[in-house]
Image (cartoon, rainbow over all chains, first blue to last red; front, side, top):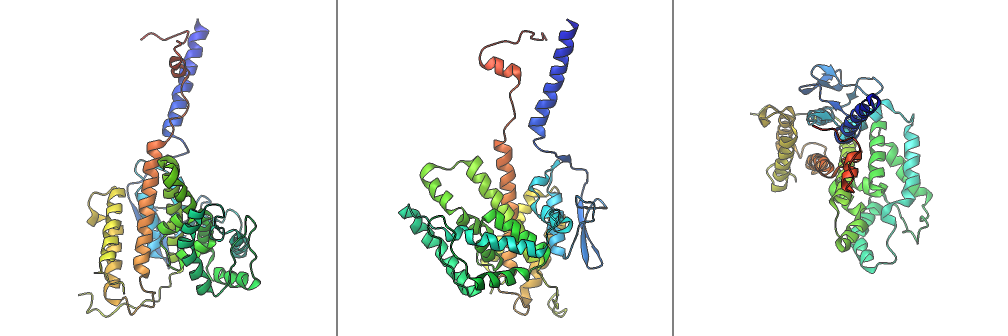
Length: 275
Length: 108
């Protein structure tokens, strides 16, 4: 009898812990341990503070960013965590961390190489061959972006036949490599993050050059999915979730690229305007 | 020319503020540092937009990007909490589902 009670005691113990795990702790979360967040400037670098403690990266470095807007958006991100800190959804912080810690030990050239290898398999180069309707939709939505891309970068790009990636001219590679290398390392990690979400370097470039906003870019990247949804119905926990996730990722990446490349050579106008 | 008074710019500003209001734990928007910063930025580019070497609409585009980020990460969290699985069923629940009882039901 004693053994039984002991066993049932253990099993209830395990059970409660287990239910707690599965209900409240699907992944490791921490309780919010700070009241407010703020930003401080420290010789040309900006830092985020949580109640006078400096925010640090996973490797233990102090999280520093090059400009004010970026520090502010990271601070807002930490401020918007209500009871628990869910770091999995804090893309801006994650991107800043990656750029500072560089866990993959990558260089800018590695990332550019990766992006160039990704380029021939760009989503926008693969038009549907079976579905007439889908093909029409793709021509209406994708072709303007492709035309814009070829005109802006002054390159020519063929479309793919079947599943074989299309050939890429050496000049195109050179142009794109030069363009990507003009960004610094932090921006490149963000670009890489955005490209992986969109599965399309061309769309990411269109975002970076302010041709489309992230919301539209994600719709274009998921064009076939949207087309199928019209026929088969929309499931919020699959399609809605992936759409929201991708848009958040792409806009975080884009925000970081635009902030990181910002140059502060601004002269404010004379005091008359501010009155 | 993206003047601060044009309609789309103001719409974006309002959307941004509404997202910040939903996410921020501080009650009053006027006390929120980010809101103040955004207003500062909007005012800064109100008169001098043309004199800066920025592409037209650059600030507006950034505001829209940030709104996209706030809106969709909130939506993601909402959907996730709504549809998140509750994990495995306990032995007792499973037994009840098929009409069995556990051998040692603790009596209350």
